[in-house]
Amino acid sequence: MTQPTESPQVPQPAHSAHSSHSVTLQVLLSLGVIGVAALLAYGATQIPSEAGYAGIGPNFLPWVVAAALLLCGGLLLRQALTGGFQDLDEASGAARADWHAWAWVSAGVLANAALIEHIGFVLSCALCFMLAVRGLRLAAGKPGGGLMGLLRDAAIGLLLAAPVYWLFAQLLAVNLPGLTDTGWI
Image (cartoon, rainbow, N blue to C red; front, side, top):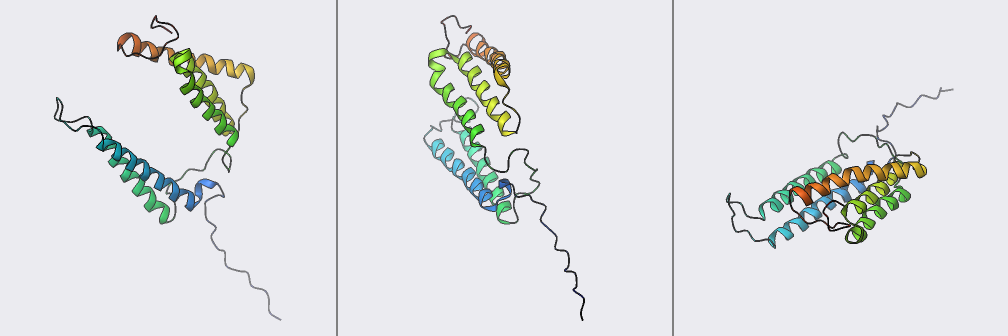
């Protein structure tokens, strides 16, 4: 009678089942970066290239960013096709996309875009900050924060948005949508 032999230990991949380790998603992400680079390059072709004061035209920076994105997308694609992204940290969030958190962040961005002309830069950015932080907190598996958390996030959003508005409106004389015509809110 023969003794069952133990099978040799097959090393298990260090990757978890998290969706960020999916080769298909990594390839799609890489192609998305390359696509953004292509769109940016197309947009750069629509900008005049006449050289300005320093001999650099207004389309220079979009071309630089498009080239950098193309390089990054190519490197990402190479890594995705040769064993996956290298040095990928373990994700701290849920294994799958958190659509509830995504909805909060998206609502913040869309509300900002829809309301900025009506309630002004400061209030719309504070609202965007409040909603986005709630979504990011939920995505990290933390509680949303309740009413006091929303009020605290709104106050932090106001403290961040107001100085930015004042910098642009008062110091740089750039017109941002305000709630009043005073240039202070």
